[in-house]
Image 1 (cartoon, rainbow, N blue to C red):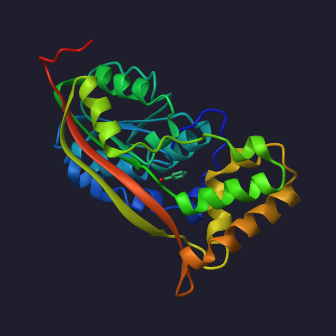
Image 2 (image 1 turned 180 degrees about the horizontal axis):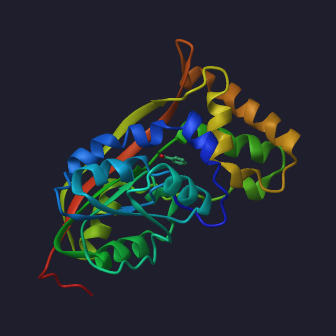
Length: 262
Ligand code: BEZ
């Protein structure tokens, strides 16, 4: 959960979008933090997975750029350390044994900066477990949103590049160029059931796609969201439930010692 100039609604997040961290539980297992390891959670959001990491390792720092999320995380999980920070230039006071990041890196267009930041914060031999949106993530929703914005004359909004959804080869190459050895990489479909059977896509747009509606009056934005939901119903509404067409990248990697970094 990371993006500058974006006011996160931690209540809407926890009430209707808790799937973001429920799906991340598998990634905690894949990282496999051991007792005594120092863990860094980059883009910790409201802290649920930070707490899951702490319960395994005993020591975790959660970092997020949203003051709102950090406030909520601190009050909910007092045994974790939470810091406001940017995943592109966070600097911990010691090297970490492992780094975890769930559903955050797609918000970081400057992906190489985030990778370099992970490298700097990790000890040699340390590992990372990362999951985020990959190539063609939420394509059905976003294509419909762009088309409808454009048709109503909101050309600038329709062209907004808000997210980084790389292909698996782009991302693993980026890691390798920056001193990591990739041990597992997957790109997979994860149709994600949305919480509300009536307003699933509307809620998703309200939670995650706010910048597309910059400069658009609230009533007009609401009409656009309804049109988007209507136009994707054939593809994304099944048996009374809404699904977002998520495509994930999941990567495990470790920091290697003798690399020829440029
Ligand atoms: C995702 O988790 O893939 C995602 C969430 C919000 C916006 C874009 C992508």
